[in-house]
Image (cartoon, protein in one colour):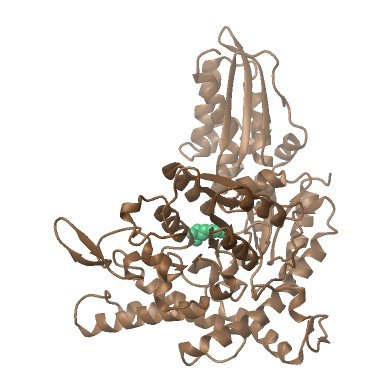
Length: 145
Length: 476
Ligand SMILES: Cc1ncc(COP(=O)(O)O)c(C=O)c1O
């Protein structure tokens, strides 16, 4: 078996790593969460503005590898503007695809987050990709701050 | 200012300052005799079957020796032989196999006593590894005096306000046990800082000893992140002047330096078999016999008692007192074989005829191995330094072939994945040294750690793969 790095680091991922979208911290926010991977030290902090059950704005602050940063960047773009229920549904689908419970086809392959599924071939890096998504789940499951 | 090459643990440039030296074709300095043994050490690579594995379609370039070393065929064979022909429990029963297994196990203890040059065979405690050895000592010092057998002077439990000095470069396994011991006893852990070069700050160390009621100094012989070799002999001398005992984490040193606990002057020395070409799940705690006799046992149960009634138990002598339960018999035997392998490494043949011959052979093997490794280290540093955006962390005075670096614009995890796709195995992350990461100002590093069996070609493959990663992620 040979591992081709381009299967993992697709162009869109490299792009989000170099030019992350929604990076930083919202000055005003009513949801927040943080994630930490003690195995590798990667960290993420999310700030969100949710109003009338809708994610109006979201930013992430992260220190980590390309997979962590790109996944966070892609995730924020994917959920911005969605309703909370919708975002949580996306989380479930994404999580199940990454973990192999669902086939990749259950996600829309025209979406950027579809590119993150390349990590399925490299289980040691799945935690990197999921860090931002778990933080999203935490932020949306908690009550308003 | 102290001379850093203090005592026999020193290696590196000064080891061939004396005597006639000559320039070899490959550019190395060695005496004529050494050049033979250097070639013999290099040929040892062929003894490691895993080194011919293909990884992702490429030959394996294994540069993760600080995590664990590979095993020579002789060690693999020895373990197989034990289970196939000699397996039995030890120290119990009267049948032939059990008597034989007991003899081989105790012979392994003698081999390890030779390996560290202990004062006596009874100072060798077999356990699960370095982590368990340090926990055993830390736990004893946090135990109440009633559990101690002959507490006296230095060798007595910690009490409120006592200070434990732990260096800033310690692996978590030589830090966390002391934090727990401090929490249990009311003692306090204080850090011995490091300098920007990655050496221990000896002035600060002296000051800490002077200003505090220091009872224990816990320090690593060599850093698993930046390769620093600490001047244990000097540290121990100073500690003893202040009535502190010295616990040395030998995990990284044992694959690279001839360990001489008598010369180092430490009180305890802990290490793991798997980092010195032996099996996993086996290690050694060496301690001065009087210390071990005074301390309470770590675990209790079978094999470590003299007499047991329903009310009370008296314990066996050391080392049995510290080996409760059935030990890792095959592991101990495999580890002894690894020690024999190292003794034979520069001396040809299949190993020393008897254990009493091991010590001088070990010394000449490690002398030759050091020459090989110093060349590899020099090559690696020379090749890494010009890579654009790459920064090697720490420049210790005396360094094992263990190098940590960071690369602009490429996170260590991503670099590790790209290197792996090229068959180059390195370690990335914090290397169980979070306080050191903080001191170095990085969240994680990429670490290349070498053993004597690595080659110049593998170092070149590392550099090529790093350059590939740079262009892949876009040169900053
Ligand atoms: C410096 C150092 N100390 C202690 C240890 C722990 O060794 P083990 O996990 O074999 O107990 C390691 C292993 O990585 C190490 O590098």
